[in-house]
Image (cartoon, one colour):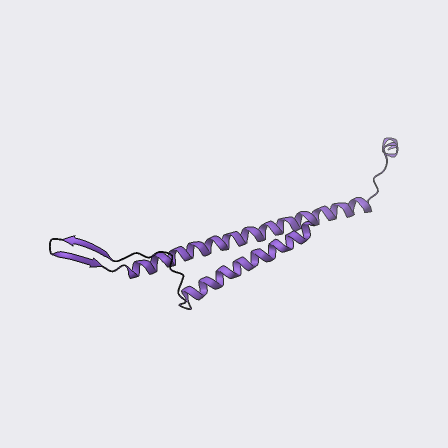
Length: 117
C-alpha cells in the first residue's frame, strides 16, 4: 500500500516541480504575460506646481511578476516536499521488506539451544 502511495507522491511532486519550472521559463524567457493580480491606478500627487500624475503600469507589471515568482517558488517547494515524502515511504517499505526477508532466511535458535552454549 505504501509503495503505491510512495510512487504516486513522487510522480505528483515531480509534475509540480516541472510545472513550476516550465511556467517560470515561459514567463521570464518566453515573454508570456502573467495573470494580472494587482492593478494599481495612476497616482496623482498635488505639488506646488500643480497636479503630478505618476503612471503605475511598470509597478503593476513588476508586482505581478514578483507575486508569480513567489507562487511558483511555493509550488516548487511543495513538489519537492511531496517527492521527498514519497521517497521516504518507499525507503521505509524497502527496509521493512528486507527485514522480513532476513527474518525468514535466518532461523533463530530456540532458547534451550542458546542456554547449552
